[in-house]
Image 1 (cartoon, rainbow, N blue to C red):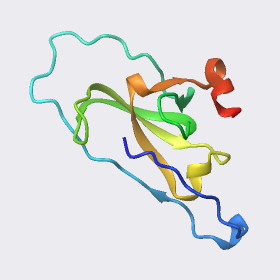
Image 2 (image 1 turned 45 degrees about the vertical axis):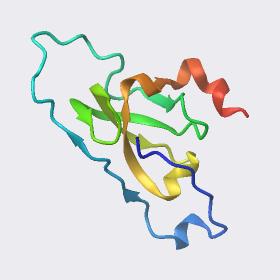
Image 3 (image 1 turned 135 degrees about the vertical axis):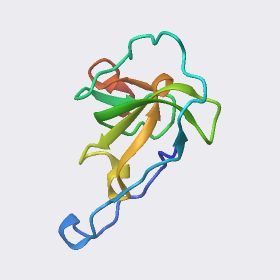
Length: 114
């Protein structure tokens, strides 16, 4: 996962360049399973990275069944549009997340408090 810490700039957002779209490398799985389990999340849901200390958050804008290049993670990967209030939004507009790293924002918002 390429989601990373960022430090908000002291410059007002209007004077900053727009955040970049960060696309972590993923690759298609060579041998697709005969049957797919349903994805845990759906497009449009708000989620957060629950297993990293930065707890970035945003809305799901897409998903793909693939293999991560950086870690051994075969399964659903979600494209997440980062929320305007997410600290990492200053650095990237969207990122990929592996299904096991995500939780619904509505049930895990307490992770952002602290």
